[in-house]
Amino acid sequence: MADQATFSEMKKGTAEDYAIIAERGAKFASELPNRILDHFCILKGDTGGFAVDRFTHSIQTATRAHRDGKDEEYVVCALLHDIGDTISCANHADLAATMLEPFVSEKNYWIVKHHGIFQGYYFFEHMGLDKNLRDQFKGHEYWNDCAEFCAKYDQNSFDPEYENMSLEEFIPMVQNIFSKPRKSIYKRRDY
Image (cartoon, rainbow, N blue to C red):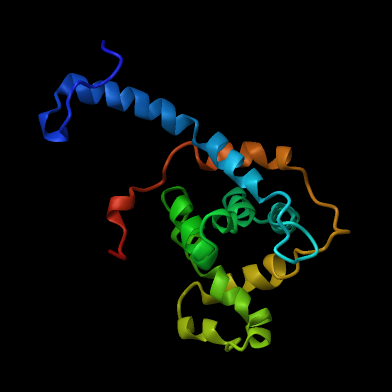
């Protein structure tokens, strides 16, 4: 089998071309957890003015969720909820949620996607914003879940004295969650 496809337009591809692409794509997909963890480590060092850097905040959020008995998927979402900060500060929650969406439940996706505005409950008033902006989602089936995530795990995870788990303890969880998509992104309801 050839090393790579020969077409320059997708519509001219052959079954052999797409077999090559599928094989290479499967290998690339199997390496996704490592790429995510590499990107996650970019959060090290930048505190954004907080008492801990974004990496430590995320580890602490996941540690709290894990110690509280949350399942592996929830813990991985807690770990990666702010990964979007590195390249998309203005809508970091959307970026993290999009990355997680094919691999997690609808509830966990919704929590990550909306945690930014729910987190605002704890500080928006100090920035001239309405702290109750999250109330626009009142009545949504996952409203309480997102409020709980922020209250119990996110807003309080800036403690430099907290005894965090190590990243190494989360690696098998990340590998497991990203080992295979649970659903196709092409079946999303929000197009």
